[in-house]
Length: 139
Image: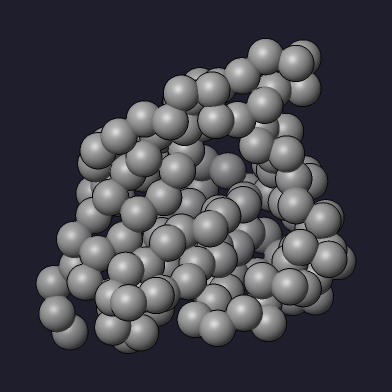
């Protein structure tokens, strides 16, 4: 997928946190350790640094939700992270994003922290970021 296509799908999937633009995707795709899995229905982007995988973003087109694609993308993230040598992973999710929190929980991610007021909401308010983690078994 091109940076523009990634940005368009991200914009369809997100309001909080704010969607990323094509330039941001282009810069990330060129960074060391970054990987992308998915297609035009949804994607996951992550990076591995020093044995730890960070799930940067996961976006699923609204019409494709609740069909198992999110779990499949998380499995693809886990596979790519392990293949790159990660023994653990982490991510941040908006506290008010109940569907995403349920997805991550179903995939084995567990809450380990909170960043108060981390995300800015469109109405000017703020939402906490929950920090989730998971361990990986060696391949």
